[in-house]
Structure formats: structure tokens, C-alpha cells
Picture (cartoon, rainbow, N blue to C red):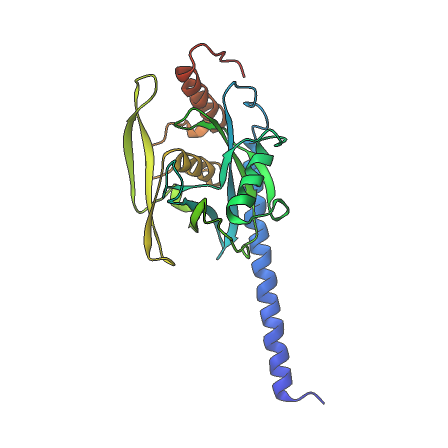
Length: 258
């Protein structure tokens, strides 16, 4: 005969299993909705022909506590370029890289121990041009919330997560003025995120913030609490137009054809 205690334990176990199944369904629903939105904005190799040095970043998404989060790294203080700055895993293209996706996955493995088979690649978004003139392609992929980063101390000093919603409804936001290479005055997004786990404040700005904002716009399809340079009703065309205007302003001899 089954004792009352065993029966009670069995009920508790079933309830826990039901909760786990419900959580998993919720995670799948959030991921599936995000994937549908992201695939509409996949640029593939549309900009790969541009005659610029190539680089890629991986924008790792995960569902944690019922919300989408994105993973960032803090660059090691040992690095000559931009030490201590927040960025996505990524770097320059190597001759052995098949495409921008291969570059992003290779760099993520080298920097934080994230293996390619741990990433479900969804799309490539509109690229940007960094301060040294490289064409940087953002690659978006989902990772499991169980992923434990192993930072390479020569390249990365820390790894942290930020809820993606923060990039449309931040607590601390400002714009930073800067002058483009063609002399035109412009501005950059700058966010400060207070990490509750580390009890530290992290500044996310520049091209990294630009990519994070665009990712949030694509997935949430909501107007942010700050100004953006895109037409939200025509996000695909306006984002591509904005990029090509930047490219043409820097490289006036280039062709505007995609």
C-alpha cells in the first residue's frame, strides 16, 4: 500500500513536473515569436560585397525568468583597443571563415567558451561601420539559459546579461554627440545598466548600443522611450537606407547599389 506521505510526495512531484512543462512551453512561445520577427529582417549576404574590412559580432539571446535577455562581454583591460568597454562577442574575419556567421561563432567560442553547436543561429541584421572603418555584421542566435560562460582572460574580463526590453525602455539613457568622418554632427545611444547580481553599473554605448536597440525594435515592435533615426512603420527599408547613407558619406567613391 502507498503511504499518505508517498502519495503527497507523488503529488508534489507531479505539480513540479507540470510547472516545468509550463515554463518550457512559455520559453518556446517567447522564442518562437522572436524568431518569426527576426527572420523578417534577415539581410543574409546582402552587404557582404561592400569593399570594407569585415568583422562580426554574435548577439546571444536567451529566455530567462520569462523574459528575453541578451549576453554582453566586458573587454579585458589587457587589450590595446577599447579596454574595459562593453561589447558583444566578436571580432575580425579570418580567411578561413566561410561567412559572417562563421566569424561570429568562432569569436564567441574563443572569447566566452560558447561552442557553435550551442547556438541556434537565426539571422544576420543590417550591419554597421565601426570607428576603424570595418563592416560589422550582427549575427543573432539563441542559446540555452543554462549556458555558463568561460571568459578568456586575455580578451574578456566579465560576461553579463541584460533584459532586451531595457533597450526600448531604459532607466538610464543619454545621447552622446559625435562628429562623423564626413564632418556631419550626429549622436550615439548610451545606456547605463545597474546589474543587480554584480551590484555594478555598466555603460553600453556606440555601435554595441545601436545593435541592441535595433534588435529590441525588431522583436518588440514598440516605440522606445527615446528618439531613434528609423521610421518604425518602415523599419527594414529605413534601417538599410540609414546604413547606406552612412557608408556613402564615408566612402564617397563607392556605389550605392546593394
